[in-house]
Amino acid sequence: MFALAMRSIRQRPGRFLATLVAAFLGAAVTMTFNSMHDTAGATNIDHASSETLRLTGGVVGGYGTLLVFFAIASTLTVNVRQRGEEIELLRCIGATPAQIKRMVVGESVMVALVGTLLAVFPAMLGGQALLGMFQDSGQVAEGVDYAFGPIALTAGFTVTLVASVGAAFLAVRRATRAATGGRAPRNRLRNFAGIMALVAGTGSVCATFASDAKNPALMAAPAYGAIMLSVGFATFSPTLLRVLLGWLGRPIAARAGASVYLTVHNMRQRSVQLAGVLMPLVLFTGLAAATLYMQAIENDAIKASGLTKSVEAKNLETLNLVVVGIVVVFACLMLINSLYAATSYRGQEFGRQRLAGATPGQVLAMVGAEGLVLTVTGVFFGTVAGIAGILPFNLIRTDSALPDQGLGIWLGIVAVAAAATLITSLATACRTLRTPAVAAVTVAA
Image (tube, rainbow, N blue to C red):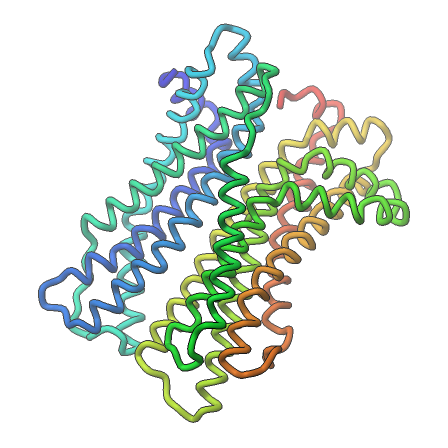
């Protein structure tokens, strides 16, 4: 099966490109920030510089690990689901589920190894740039030399390989059961993890009210709460989408015509597949809104008090901005990969619709409506998670129930989410529609 896996990669490299990009960026981010631990371990470094570097490596490295797993899991899940007919054919010629698992996991391991090796040099450059940013802002002494060592390499290879193997195993387990007509595995573990994330997020948000307004770590509890609530909502995204479509689908479809009716019907049937798109949307909106608004509130509060920013405040601001940058990159990567794979795979579906009388414009309208519904759903639940962290922080920090920053930051977040969703889905659909309808329905999935 390992030889079959290698042939599969050589014959269809485009199928594994999304996974390779996810593994490459994930390993690059992980090694970049964990190299701060290597740099902080030097014998001649001062305590303040070492603390700043270790804090950056620990906090951002932790968030990066979570996002790496989500990115790789999202792309691998979509990839494996699209291979349902191939898996079914392998089962018909005698392959056992264990052999199919070894094949898919072997493919994932090879792609992850290649992506991690390619990421080593960019991670070294990124780590040097990050250290230079800290030195320019005065948070790290000028004499500190950059080091890229065993901590960065071990973290990069371990995180990427574990995420790839785990995600591939879970995805192919479900696919092999579906291909053989077996009952799909119950998502008890996922549901339990989602519930625990929601409970942890709620508890962390409530803990904000027990904090002192002058505590430098005041932002930690609400930010962590918003992150965990976003993860919880993302975990339950298929259920949330079905509930939303059940409430609003029929009234909207009755007024908007055939394209939207078809959109609602398709999304109800494909809610599990669309979860790979909703997850990055919810995570991006929730994390970006919470961190950007809380940082803006903190900056305005310091400015209003007439004080200058301490080293701790500068470190916290840098961490927040870096975290948001990572979230933007990975959320957009996950979103684009999932949408591209899911939309390009629908070539046969689009061909059958055109043969049944639908025009290319109607098909594009359907895809655009799907993207709009996904954007609204993801932004809504991500905003709920972000607000849950923003309001308690603002109340404790400023004694005001509502922040004074307005909707500008939120509108910018929504614009990025909507642009990534709609542009990717519509551009991919246009490319898919270039294939004649008769040829599209005869192409193997």
